[in-house]
View 1 (tube, rainbow, N blue to C red):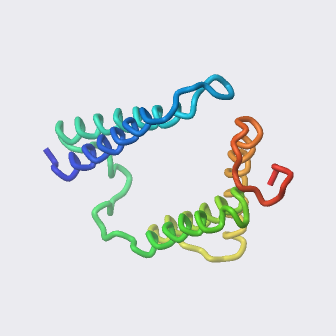
View 2: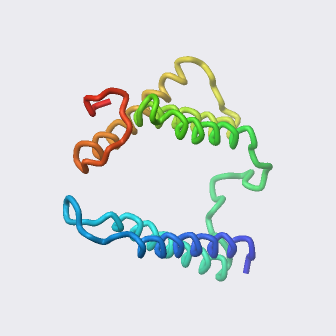
View 3: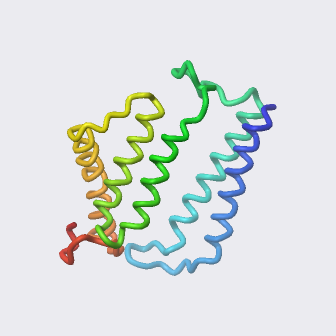
Length: 166
């Protein structure tokens, strides 16, 4: 048994168990649409418990198979610069979401996360057109999520304008 891989599975089980335990403390009174506020924590917690159990099973029966199937240099050093790009994206998202709104802060997070991934692959391009393309993709991904939460689910997220569309 690979102990490091088993530790990942056990950690996932602990996180899932913590979320499920927290979900039991949330009111289950049904709200809009017939589901209560504890529905999503239950789904996430149970999914993490299932994934954690699967990870422990994988570690106990020969290790994570196929994990590095297409990557010849999976055991190489970590990309700390890529990690810094991604961390900056998450931190700026949290810092700017109430200022520039959900869509733009999530799009910026996407751009910086993509820069981190591309840097770790040795393919980072800071050309304005590449960054603009990433920003457009980030907006295309975050806008429908924003609209679904604000319009369909009536959950208030920070917007750029008072119209509820940006």
